[in-house]
Image (cartoon, rainbow, N blue to C red; front, side, top):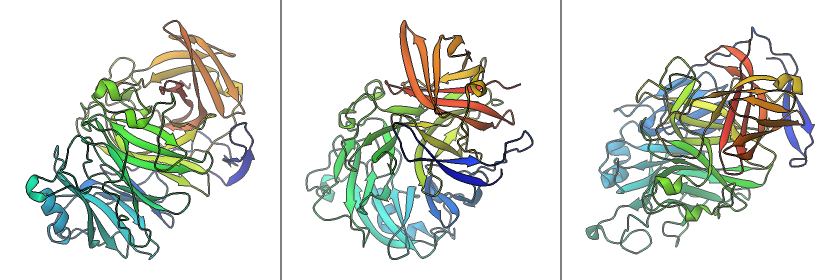
Length: 478
């Protein structure tokens, strides 16, 4: 796509926002090529110029461009290259959990140069789980047992839980879904948890990778009382100086309404707040209660106006359990997740999209998978035309959102929904829509993206309202 050049773009919110511009002009002949892999619960680590995704059942994939992925390993079997024999190598954790596999590993490189895999062992629906660490000299393994650091689901015969009290499944965490990371000051943390007592964070020794003593299970960030929340991941943004807590709400299968949400905090241990100012610690209860919290980045959708389960058009079902990455060289943010698809049952693959910061410092997700696109300054004339509009709502639902058509005219919006719009600095966009007698403003970002089903470059926007509802617009190109 030509050479890249960094420039500095000034805005009221981010005076040092770095944007990469493409020196050459995109042409219709420049087609994106994808090769997706299968990794459930993908967690990213970048080693030199290669991105790796580690997931449940030891599924691993790698890529140099985030578009063409190679499957390194698919599942657990004796002699696999990642952990050759989990029943022996990870015996302490899997025997505690009475499991035959491991879930949702996260790999981090420690100061000793070795790769530490934080993994969990559990069985579906049970809080009897363990988080362990396996270590390797090479990112692709083999990994060997190092330690089991947390257990949950203790019975009276097992003795007390990690905080010295009897285990309470509504208050204490289920020890799965670990993400280990350094904060901006170089301190090491692990965020983890799923359903049951909620999502917790605990500080680790940066030299050993083990929990610092006296913390029990750590601090609760969100959830509890078996709220449908799991898959936590925390990403720090040097542009906004916020920590962003990503979680998945709902059930992970094609009927569970899995969706990705985000909240933010100035402090790594919280409290985390959503765009309405709601404290994440108060987010607990059933689906109808919890769905009111967080910015919902993406849920079920299909860009098909008549058939929501069509497999021929672009759409996702139960996208979730994400990780994220900030590239300091390009100032880009990426989100990695697994997703199912309309009309395709429980089959799933990974997807990678750009995350974009709006004027208010909230992430929105680009509508289409990353295809090498960068931010190009757009003029009003670049945005005029008819769009497919998806409103992701706030619900935890198995319903698949379908598009309506709107037209962006000179400052006005017509079609299925009326309103007005404004472009700022060629990058930020305000979309104001008439909804139930009220004017609702969505603040977001516009950019050119590759449409993977129509096989062409199109104009898109992604924006979020003050209620935490995200909309996507995709221009209908001739």
